Amino acid sequence: MTRAALHHPQSGRAFLMIVIALAAIASGIVVSSKLFDRSQELRAAQAFPEARPLPEFELETASGEPLTRADLEGNWSLLFFGFTNCPDICPDTLAVLDAVMGDLDRMGREHKPQVVFVSVDPERDAGEALSEYVAWFNPDFIGATGSPDALESFTRQLGVVYYLGEPGEDGYYSVDHSASVMIVDPQGRLYGRFAPPFERQAIAADLFALGR
Image 1 (cartoon, rainbow, N blue to C red):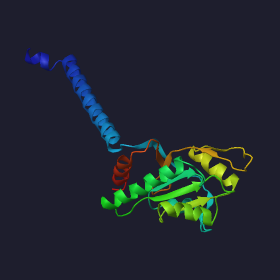
Image 2: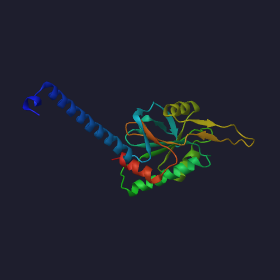
Image 3: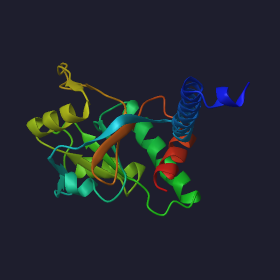
Image 4: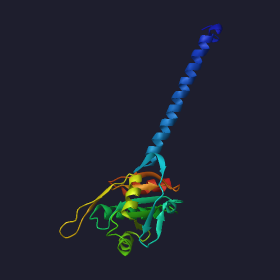
């Protein structure tokens, strides 16, 4: 190729296009690499595309104190919705979360997430019954519930669903409810969720990474 050809406008334009194309490819590799790394960092947590601010709400803790959005700010929080008469999903999930807290202690996590168990069965779950239930799994867990209207509004905003069944002859009724654990970040935003089946070690690893 002659020296004149190297300085030809068409040659220069072609060279520039090649440089731009290579830069775009390199940029794509970097972006893909970052996305791949992010997906690898979170083994169990399903992060939403964008964290969503929680709506204003007011529930009541088992000790009778108000629980609002402000109480979920400043630290990571895990919200699980259920009822104390739950035969399997609720006790199994709370037991896993208790084990995860122990794992985080051993991993040296200084500020562990706060765990809030929200009962969607306020008629049967209030005060001492709710307090004793959550304390049986972990004394640091927070039990809370609210009026039917408050619960319906709060759960709808979080994408949590539940249904109170019809009472039987003995008056007992069950409750169908979402089984995911919702993740709230320190800014009081809905970050994502842990969906069953729960892998204790993966959850602990994710919470440790999120807290760094």
